[in-house]
Image (cartoon, rainbow, N blue to C red):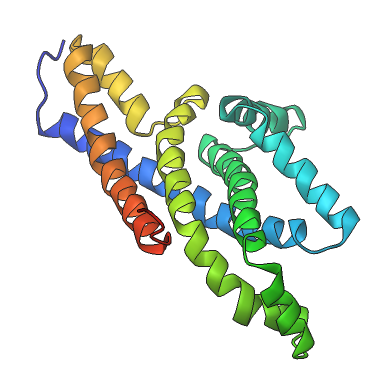
Length: 218
């Protein structure tokens, strides 16, 4: 029985952290691509496309991430498709992020005053040019705080990957706790690692919100 943490145990925690960061990065980047497409679909003006995008968002925002992980991992297995825990978690996080980021960015796009879009149309700008030169530059600024806030939630959400036996930071902590019989110490260290990762992101999000929010306080 191991009663204290040594270099090997700290190395395992570091490896778990790297897997957590890898999952977060893949889920956020791939989800960002999907979310951008969802946001454009939701604000396209085509009713059928908006309905499809809205249905996708409602399904993934209205169900727990844990359930989505179960469905992707075990549901694909029922189709006799071999999917590793890493790939299953990455796909689930990507779909989850696509829905949330799509809705965040849709709100940011639609927050741009309609008059500016109408003026760009009057100047002869087509849809792609209106989005590129008029709408998106303003929408990006509005969306930054909420986007960073979601990234923080996504980092913490990777802890659910343990449910499909993927060894990220949280599961590494559980395994070490079972070996050392010192759960309080282990989980305190794991919690501190999550804090060190998430707190700077939260601080940056608040800083961006202060920077881009008009100062209308008296």
